[in-house]
Length: 106
Picture: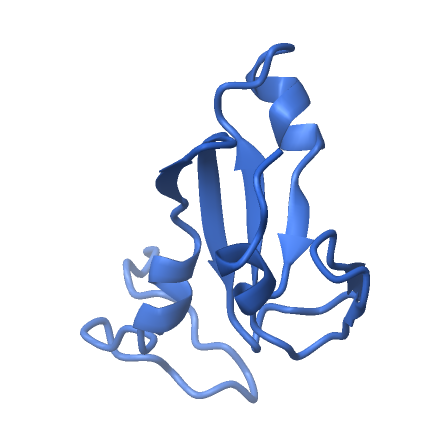
């Protein structure tokens, strides 16, 4: 019997049309890209974490208070670290948005 070039039908699962694509969440897509900020305390990479992506507890270095899951916040790390990029990324910290904006340098 000759083979068929048609794909096998999956049992119990609806077929997906080729033209359909999952909906893109623009807020989540943009949130993954860090921005670069300069200040008197150095050059920083800052990435926004949305409420949806905030899954753990963190301690804000600005106010020393908890950042619970589900709260939008920022992750920041120094770009001009003395010990290199890998060390700077390992030393990244999660900040409340207000604490980051009002931080004192030095």
